[in-house]
Every structure is written in structure tokens, then in C-alpha cells.
Length: 181
Length: 299
Image 1 (cartoon, rainbow over the protein chains, first blue to last red):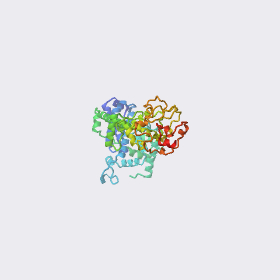
Image 2 (image 1 turned 180 degrees about the vertical axis):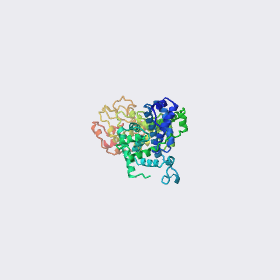
Image 3 (image 1 turned 90 degrees about the vertical axis):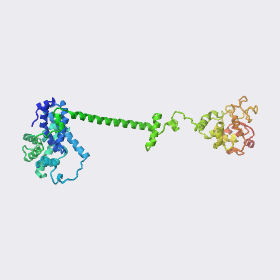
């Protein structure tokens, strides 16, 4: 579902129907991005992202592209916060063979129910952090190079270089059969 | 991202469009994106319905945390500056005393008490004279005023003050180690102890009891018979009062413990420099020219 500039402008003016349309258009991509980033609760975080975006719609500029950039900027910030929080306070769980990823697919993968998705996550995990972010924003977020550079605070050339290296690395993984799932 | 978008992406990175392996990777990645939007949370659903409670709540939380941090910072600043001022003893008196007492009870270290309570004079402020400290300070403050006119105060010569103690503080003079153990300490011993205090000028400049050209007028002017410079000098002005303050302190009244009590004392350089026909070297400082053991021995 593509987001139009008219819908973005209507959402900016406070139209609730347009706001719901924006959510339906962008929420799946945000959810996919948060899944690829390994966020613990991607659905809940998706809702938090839009809760943070809605008060900022008044200052929105740039139509649908600007709204996409704003939404993924918030989503990226939340994912970074999630990773940092997990590093600072790692959760300790009692061992349960039912959730052991070495024996069974993780709960996230089970929820997704797709082996291809699990394989994709393992491939992305082999990329560097910046390559993974750029590739997922470009592919899953359907953002341009300029939008991705704006979200990450990097130059367009730097984003292009990261994107190129990331995609070549993923292709090399497929060629070498590094991820065999 | 559509298939055409993936082709554009592959072209950007220099790969051939419709590269099978690359397209496989990207299409599997797109499987992470669900077809439909996830169900919004209750709060988001309310927001999509037109309510905005989250923004207000978030702003309040941020403001509360900011206020708490600012309060903590200001409190720590006040405590730190107060501690520095207390350590430097620069707080007001009552506050400094309270901080000192509190630190004595609750802290492993102690802040100083207010200055005047500690008995330490501030720089530029005279020390307070308490009942316990009156003796020493009184003697030090009164002593220069009661020096004999011929004896200039020599700060470096601590021995100068000691023989003069009987002038100011009678009771303490006996206990002073410089009281020479007996009230009959010969003034000549003072001369030998303090050669720098000896008058070196001409006799007219130093009314220190040096024998002048004019003989003594009467014993009443100088009870000890010391020849005075001016017969009209009142007894109070005359340094010959020195023996009179202590009745038993007349020269030669008792055995003197001074090392100059030797039968033949060697004259000091200042004494020899003076062309004074004094019969006794010790008499230059003694207020009495009466025959003393020293004078009689050396005469």
C-alpha cells in the first residue's frame, strides 16, 4: 500500500481517516524493519512509534516522503534504544528447551512462520550494524538513499557505499551457501 | 519495495538487474513485512480516534525528571560550596559552629570551629584576652612600655624580656626561669645576659643610670645611690626604680646565679667602648653604683 501526498497532508491537518490510512500504509514496513532489527516486541514498538509520530504531524513537511522519513526516524531511534537497553540490562530467563533457538525456532520466527524469514534474519546478522541498517531501511522501509542518509545522519555517498557492501555480502552468502537454512 | 524497486537497488550497487541470487535475498527479506498492519495498541487506538493522552504524559514525565535532576544538581552545588566555605572557616559564626558540631558527630572528619572560639586570632584582628591568656599577652603588651629608657627593646633577644619580668608581673617573675632563682638577682647579670641591650651612646643620650659627670645629688633621688643624669629627674622617671620594685632585689643582696657573678667579669664590648669612667662594668646597667661584689672586685 503506497502512501500518497494527499493522505499525508490530510493527516497533518488532523484528519482521523487520513491518520488511519497512514498507519495502514506505514505500519507493516515499520514492523518489518523492527523485526529485522531484532526488537523484542516489534508490534508494541510499532504502536509506540506512531504514538510518538502523531503529535509531530503538525510540524511535518515534505509530503509522503517526509512522513515516511519521520516515521522511520522514530522507529530507528526506538530500535537503537531497545538494543542499548538490552545491553545495559540483559534479561535473564530460566532455560526452557521449548524456546531454545538451537533446538526450536525462536518465538519470533514461529510467529512469522516462515523459514525464509529465519534465513533472512541470520543473513542480516552476519552484516555489520551499519550495513544491516542501510539495507533494511532501503529494502523494508522502501526509502530512498537520501531519506536513509537523512535518518542516519550520514552522507549519501556513505549510504551508497554501505548499501553496496551489504548487498554484495548478502549475495556472497547465497553463493557460498553460508546460510543453509 | 516492489520488484522494480529491487531492480533499481541492484543497479545502484553495480549488480545486474534481475540477478537471481541477489533477487532471492531481497525477496526473502521482504517477507519480514506483513501484508497488513498490526493491530494497534489501546493507546494508539485511542490516539487514532482523536485522543492525545500520550504526548501530554510524556511531556510531564520529562519535565518531572528534568526538575528532579535540576534540584539534585542545585542541592549538590549548595552542599559543595557550603562544605568548602566551612572548611575554609568562612561561614557565619553560628553556622560555622553548627557545622563543626554536626561534623564532629556525624562525619569522619571535622570542620573547624569559629576562629575566635578556637582562640586563634584572625589575621589582622587582635587576639582576644581571656582570663586564662591574660598573663602572657599582658606581659607582652605592657613590657615595651615599661622598658627602662636606656634599654631598647630587642625583639630577637628573648633574654631581654626575661630580666624585665619582675617589672611587670611580680608573681610570675619568681617562677620564671629567668628570675634567676632569687629575688636578689643582680642587675649586673642582666648586662651580661643582654649585651646588645647595653646603651652604646653617650651618657647624655642614655638615661640608663650610667654615671654622669655630675655626681649624685642625694640618695633620696636614687635610693640605690646610682648617679643619675639629671638630678631633677623624678624617681618615677628614673630607672633606678628597678631595685625598688622588688625590695630584695638590691644589687648584691644575695648570691646571684648569673654567670657574670664571677669575681672578675670581663667587660662586654659595648662596655669597653664607652669611655665611661665607671668603677664597675656591671654598674653600667645596674641602677646602683653602690659597691657590689663585682664592683668591689674589679675596682
